[in-house]
Length: 211
Image (cartoon, helix red, strand yellow):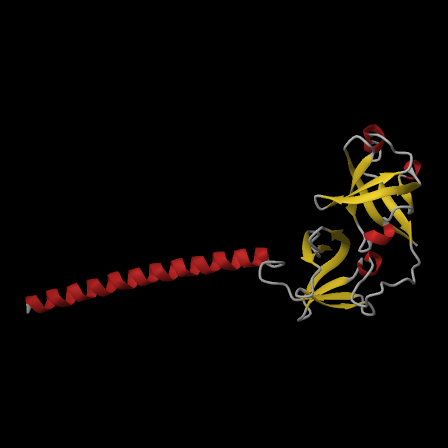
């Protein structure tokens, strides 16, 4: 089974290094020196990793036969693809490979449908689920235990407990606008009632003076 494990970014320096957008939970395994990776487009590969290092929070790789900036820049946007046994599982039972998570349905703890996982984004600080909503829009869900409370591979779903504003920001904005409008209406009605009360009081006083 072939999995995309990284995308090559821009060249770094003049000695053939490139920045890499990591798309695997195990870069130390999939992107280690000596790893031979297929590519998309296929014409740029296969590529063998010669060296790897982290610089300013970003992984830098150098490939065999790529010795200068011009050659490195020619690899930009190339996808790196690893051959993975589909039966292979992470050592930690709480870890998952990307291909296990892609296409899972995402629901809240009360069963409300959120969408479907279309991509896993691996950032230096955390991983993100890229979730496509039923209306075609996307929302990013941090893959942390406080938010993703359950991964059920048998039921093909991920259960989340989103904090306010994570997935319902538009609804909350609309709700806030409604609340503001209701408060405005209530204030206007209160002012009108006050004016009517004062007018009634003045009329009552005028009637008393006349008598």
